[in-house]
Image (cartoon, rainbow over all chains, first blue to last red; front, side):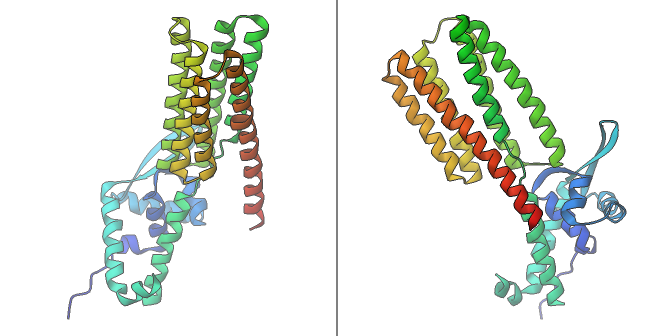
Length: 102
Length: 194
């Protein structure tokens, strides 16, 4: 029996997966954009963004806009590879279900 | 388990489509440049000083566009490859026209006819490229109209060239810009009620 692939737990979290998916399609996005598009709250998304940043999956640039702090996030190559591997493994795990869903 | 995994797949698809969705609306810039060109033309004709009227008006339009696009970028909160591609096309064509207009006309390189051919061709390129990136047939059609205008201008008298320019500015910039602004309002209204 072939060994089933494991899913990266850091990517698997719903909110973290949502953030990585969005960041894979844009050059960069600020904190408010990510919070609004994922329908999350400030505190919740901040904690997950920090986890992704610590893992090196995303990079943050902290700046100011009209004297207010502004955090701009972008996906790193490590993050892109992690998301690609996650999707590949997810498809393998789903197997027939994935083909039916398509 | 499978349901959870399928849910994750669905989440990825939803978020990718969210990220690709752009809320950038450029109707105001078409209106601004259309109005700017008509003002410059009227100023040049009335004062007989086109060498002042055109650079001043176009510089003001350029500054206003830079301010407006910068505000839009900040409000959107994200930069996409599509928005950067569109911005680069219009920026490049705009800068090319500005320098060709100022240096080329100042140095007497261009006649009215040859400059208008260049202007119409560059407007056609920007609209066709933008429409192709967005897969939007209306703007591609507009690009084709600008190119048809460029060909027509080659065979027209100076007087007719001016009227062609006015007609294109009114239709392909002012009216198109107003249509885009109307579409923006309708989209926002739809988004609020959805």
